[in-house]
Image 1 (cartoon, one colour):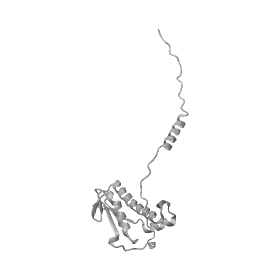
Image 2: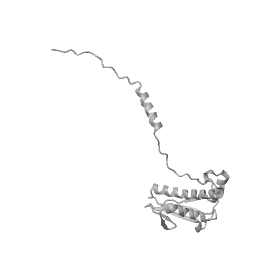
Image 3: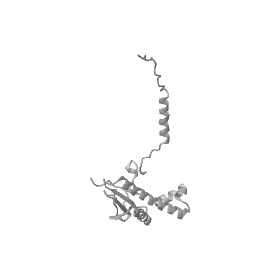
Image 4: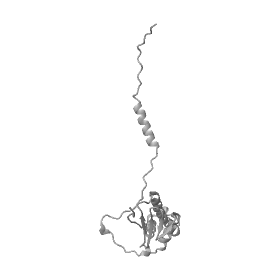
Length: 171
């Protein structure tokens, strides 16, 4: 017995809406996913022309030297300290300077980790923020963020963020 094979066509798959669906899924995932912003340090760079800058001699007693070595050990003026003590050290140094002629000098090693570097920078900025908050509460009775622009200018003039960063050492 012989069976005849039927000549039936297999129906084609309609793929016209596949591109639309995939595009909508792509847009959905782009909109709903979050992307981490790049980490960075906001700093005010010096002006381009050197004529608008003036050199200022600062005595050694008004310079706080912070060094971060290749093993992520923190040193202040030649003495090792912990990251937890750094903020208090910076606050007491800056608060004890009645003059505006002070500098917090920072030096790193080429083998310093980014995590330790950012932790050090964030701690220094937190020390200045704490000093500004304290002055705002004492002088104006409210937080620094609630101060008027004139009040902020007075506080920033008293505690300007002066951080000088040297070239990294090491190989």
